[in-house]
Image (cartoon, rainbow, N blue to C red; front, side, top):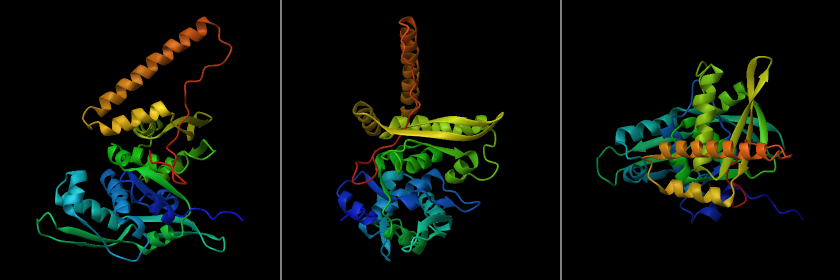
Length: 313
């Protein structure tokens, strides 16, 4: 008899003693934003933290509470700024694709946060109380598709698009499939980009794809790569690659997450420069020795194992 698939609830129980693990339902990770809606980087990080804070009770019809002081330890922002991020989650409409028990696919829409209460006093014990929307709770309760994210990695990203790619690829990095093609329209929808944002390919590549690739390869437990797809002279899509990191790369990523944020960009760019130098040296050696095997420059990518109890990355 086949073993039943592990549910999100099972994964939450299994990882509840791991302070770095954020268990996210696959349907939630793959959620799409309604037209005109998207999350700022701060709100996206806050959402991940609220999911972790709710823990095993995330699918319950209940009110969750968290002190401002706990949030401020992470964000170090004013109460007003934290409230702005909370209200952003309350006002943002998303759609998630789900499958009913009889196998029929349908789309469920609703806000992320359904209800918010806040205490106005300035005491350290002042709380924010919130409830996840019914749509979100039902999706999570029935999900058998999930990813284990790293809290430290989530908080380290500097671009909202990098964080979105991290979430998106976290569901795929541990699978046999290691690449997939996406049209630019599909990618823009997945990223929650408003129409007219970065319409030129050069800008989309520089500020979205290259930024995400650099941050993920520096901080995550998997690597990401891509290559453009052209139809005629027009850039029409992207082929994404992903793959789990080896032991040495994992150690370097974890070391970086332990370091202070100050200097991170310089460290990342320095690493890129060193890799480019190593690549050039290796090419010269291969050319000199007339190596018969073609040399590949490592476009492969991926994200940490994210299912069936794998460690977050």
